[in-house]
Image (cartoon, rainbow, N blue to C red; front, side, top):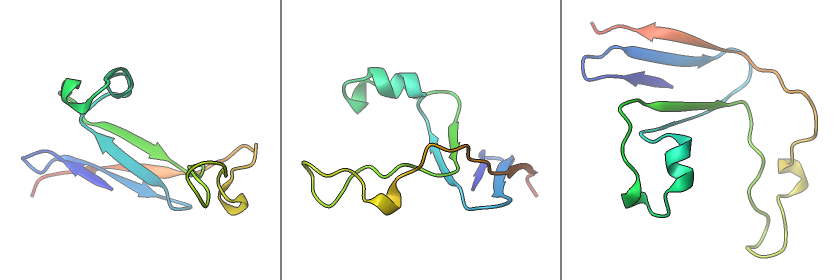
Length: 91
């Protein structure tokens, strides 16, 4: 994943071992958790980047009873992953 400003400067996140999940928001977690509606959120002056190694499944085969399928569950282990943060400079 790469994030740059209007001038072309920024950062690049590069997975070193396994794939990773990256999300970027114009809002802090606190802002998103406390707002009832998206129009109530004030845009941040900063980009909030979230890097995850893996994620727990959010649902099963229907919308009412079942949890995630077994193959999408995460066991209670220690997980390790590596990624590198590299500078991106405007040309």
